[in-house]
Length: 353
Image (cartoon, rainbow, N blue to C red; front, top):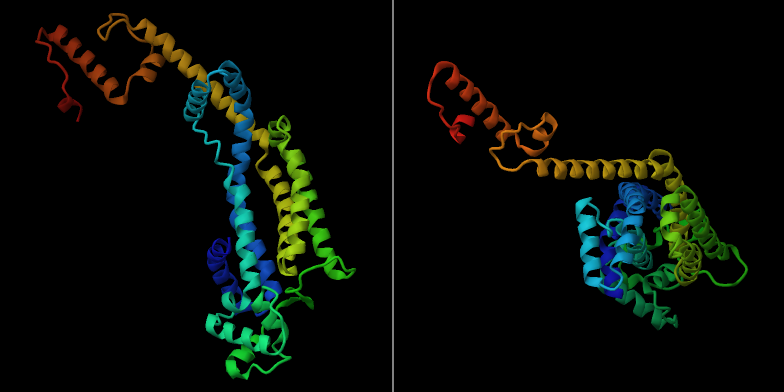
């Protein structure tokens, strides 16, 4: 799992490094990074909202197909795929906005655990040497060597690393409003205990806001109980994460939850689920009426040379632009042939170019 978080952490680390090179305060960088992530994810959230509204329209049809082909799973899947394809719907389109925050979270954990690598760009050899110095001075490894180095950089002699490296580490501001972001919260009664508590509370509140602001999703998931499960699972997950990682990760998660709640309100105001649901219903109804009309009109057409003229609406629907031009030119030539007693000449593709 470490290789995966390391891999995700590389691009996030470069973003954090770029921000830190300008601002020189890790806590402020973390705030800006969180806001930036939410801003970049906003279009995906809009897409998810549309997909949820669309799914609520399809739900009765999906249930109908599932009931009709309950004993024939292969036919059931075939009909569902046909339904999705007909209306241009991808049932997986709303998954990415739900998964992406967790992908970013795990990448950020790596960045916060390894600030010397990602932010200060200190080589692994130098970090290994610094870890060795800590060991020689009786500091037991906690499994987070770079944070241990930061905590002890002023306590021991690290001159072997070079004056520039030592100065760079000593001047690294790894705090926010005086709070050390490298501390891992415990059950001890102190200010750090607020981080896991607030992580759980904000996760619960954002779930509540999301349910209230997105009734289409609530209605869709109520039968499965998915939303209710997530409403309780996410706060517990948030508390567990906040107790397992440095305060910096918990702070990011709290701010991310708050911004998610604000985003839900904005999405509801600008992109109402009821509005999209109504649009999709009208579109599906229009498509159904169009297909019904096409079938009815095609039944009237016995052969291509039928003497019975097509009504304009049917002709527009069934014939392409080229075919309509061909027919208009043919009718004009027939009139001219009858009027002037000339031989009728068939219309070719060259005449239409």
